[in-house]
Amino acid sequence: MRELKCPKCGNVFTVDEADYAAILSQVKTKEFDQEVNRRLDELHRQHLAEQKAAEAELEKNHQAALNRKDLEINRKALEIAQLKKDLESVGQQKKTEIELAVMEVRQKAQAYLNQKENEITKLKSDADVKRAEADSKMAVLKEQYEGKLKSAQEQVDYYKDLKSRLSTKMVGETLEIHCSTEFDRVRPLFPNAYFEKDNDASGGSKGDFIFRDYDEGTEYISIMFEMKNEMDETATKHKNEDFFKKLDADRNAKNCEFAVLVSLLEPDSELYNTGIVDVSHRYPRMYVIRPQFFIPLITLLVQTSKKSVGYKKQLAIAQNQSIDVTNFENQLNEFKDKFGRNYRLAYEKYQAAIDEIDKTIAHLQKVKEALVGSENNLRLANDKIDDLTIKKLTRNNPTMRAKFDEARGQNG
Image (cartoon, rainbow, N blue to C red; front, top):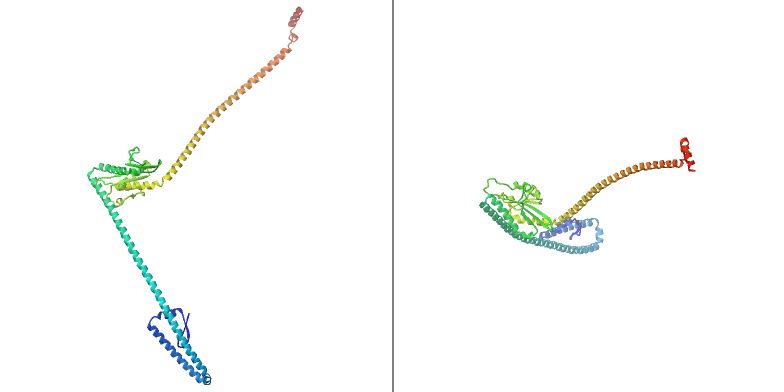
């Protein structure tokens, strides 16, 4: 809330910010000043009327007191005059402050408008520059497009003219020769590349050309090419998609990574006349191109595939390591098999020898027992011989005893 003091009557009253702003916004014209003066006059007249009424009432009720206070009233009158003068001075000061505030607001508003005008001017200038740049780029692109379109049209006209002068077989062969010639022209760009006719029909089918390129002995890209063309006068018109299945089969049979159909079929097709057409949604890594995109496509695929050379080398090393491990495992298994077989045979022979030894031992044991039995018999025989005497021999044989007695008498 803000306080305002009437410059005439000295009354103080308050107004809110909205009323103050409204009053401030009106302090702009002569009419507002006149209205302020009019209202100040009204307030002054109202104050005089109220003052006269108060004086009459005071005079009626306090005539005696007024007489005693004439000097005081005069003093108050002087004070009132001074206060009026001060109020007028304050009013003039406030008016000046208001005018300065209004002027400051106007200056800020004008500065803001000037800033926005400058920004708008700059934006317009930038837009004009960008529009000029866009027009320039558009002109360049248009010129490039028209050049490419003219070149493509010249190629189409060339091949149409070429087809009109060649037989169907010659057209196809001429397209192959054209592609081969185009590659020979840029062969220095691919010093390690292999690009030859596919003459291997052992699988029942073959493509036209195979492209392979290597980096330090590692193959990092391979492309199966099929070239297709036909005379405009040919009764049965083929479509490019008629050859997709065969081309994909040839790519798989020759273990190629990409398959590319270089085609002059469907010469009015907007799809195939725009550039390199990716048909991988039908068959994996398959593209259809016009002859003028033959070298650009090879270059594009080579540059893309070269990024994978490092990975392929690592894969080859891993595969070689896997092969070494597999060979080691195979050799170990073979050694185990041979060792097991030899061990089995040795064990069988060992077991047979043990059996023979056991048999021999059993036989020798029998021989031993026989020998031991024979020794006992010999010992008994020897004992019997040692115990044998003439007396025993002739004990129950009187005849032999008489003979022995006779023989002893004669010897004596």
